[in-house]
Length: 493
Image 1 (cartoon, rainbow, N blue to C red):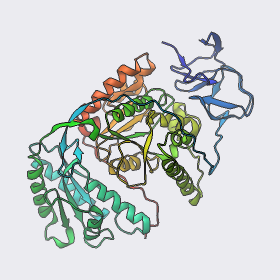
Image 2: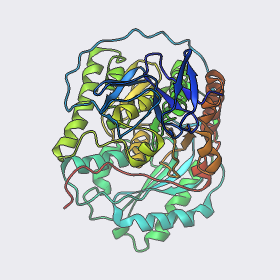
Image 3: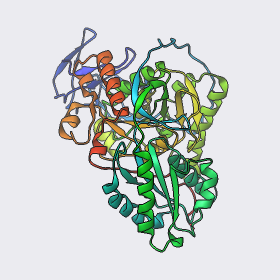
Image 4: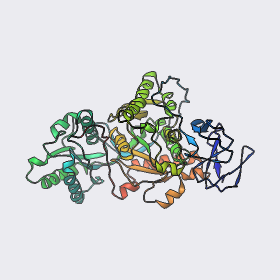
């Protein structure tokens, strides 16, 4: 096994697969590279001499410039590499020709809903309209677990701190996300739990929910109930009675919507886990399915790769707005646009935002961009979609679920135990993490740095996701974790 890898022929850095010791000698393209210093696994080593201000190339693209002269074999990281990104940029649509994907068929066992949507779980969800009833919702979920029967998977509550004391778009975003979750097909039944005096009360929220099945969605206003626990549990029993009769049926993968997110990335993320997810995305799209890519701030520096894959100029303009609107969000709050990567990313070998973004966007595969979604907007077009949401793991994963994803794929080099409203598949970028955190990690992409074949690994991963869609529990489900987070942007009263 090689101890270094050059990702692209144009790169002037290589990545250490294992820790490199000073003095070690490597052969790359018939040229020797002697390590000038110790270099941690996942970090970069110069494969040629670099002058000060010279661009550092990784993935075939600049990831910043050298802040000083760098010798061949020297460690390249935050001490001698700086981002080359600016603020708002002008973009030109330069569409690329993409090879047409070969069509394929695949199936999973899911729950077909009366409205035509498909769920991969048959859960009962308790959605609070406001944070004041969070504890009531959680207590109901605990007690109602005793009622679970038939095809119902479990009862889950989704507490959050919002729904009141918000203004303008901020309040509207909360209502939109709550309504999206209430309408989500992974829920066979939903109890909407209100307090009664909140801004986003049930009557207002109904306007965002739209038409609903009274057997599937029920409402309870705690201030109007003499005993909200007893009344709530009775409504949950009724929801379980209805949902428990439903059965999984064979469904085409063209009904599958999968969100894609990364967090706690390291120097292997853009080499193993993210490309694996990109290959999966292409494969699902070839079946007629849908994928959603988000965390806009981690597109900065690689955004033109996505822009030039837009199916038409209108989508290109929407993508430009997606990027610049998020940059303006940073500027409105007087924050540095490129305050990224995180300390954990840097420890793992990522040095600049370009470095992070070029690895992050590997998850998009090679398909055309078919849709660009506002925060809280649900998917309408099959194929690859871009979604406006921040990089925060919980907020972005909740946004993916709200947009219609039945499953979220979460690649990581550092590891995290969190969940989202839908099954959240953790994919490790390195085998060390997979071995250490087997109760967190669902699939090890680290084998791709250990000579495993990408095609074979992708096929195995694709079949694994079909199993998850058919009911196989992921680690966070086994441990009973359910999380959600709403993007808070405005004033709190």
